[in-house]
Amino acid sequence: FINRTKGVNQKAQSVVPGLLYGVTNTFSLFFNIPVATKLQSSTTCSSGISDIFLQGEYAFYVHQTPCSVNQMTLVASLFFPTGSPHKQPPTGFGSCSFFLGATASHLSVDWHVFAQPVALLTTSHHGTKFGNQFLYQFGIGRNMSYKTDAFIFSAMLELDGAYSQRNKISGVIDPNSGGNVFSLAPSLWFSTQ
Image (tube, rainbow, N blue to C red; front, side, top):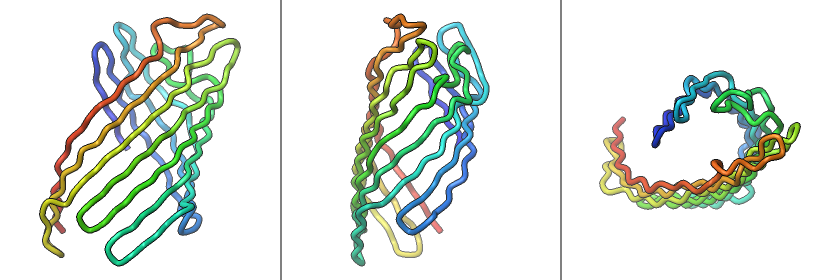
């Protein structure tokens, strides 16, 4: 997975090689080694390995019909402190972190609806604690046109957001941290065989 984001006075590029293993039809494990190829915040720049994580996902509800699938899952991840909290900007939290979330989705021939609330909970190390993050994602999509065994043309509207609490560095709250960011993303998708 390759990710690149750009904002006001901020840039982030990362490469995330991972291994996904389906243990059963309803449970999977996902192991990732993220590498920040370039992080930039104002005038500082850093790069390096980020916090490695192991994620499990369990589909506790799956209902299938010939024309639709409804599914709900629970997701949990453990982040290991392999990144550096001392680089500017940091490539890791400097302590173990936990990711807890849920997903719900409906996929039918014509419609796709999904929602994902999650929390990234950090721990403290030597008086430094990066703020917890609460993430949300909601999307709705529709197949606009399709022909079996030929093509699919779809449209989607997605809302993504993240609320971050303030960081505490050496026991002192950083007033320039935390906040709420969200985006509304319309997209079109065309696929053929």
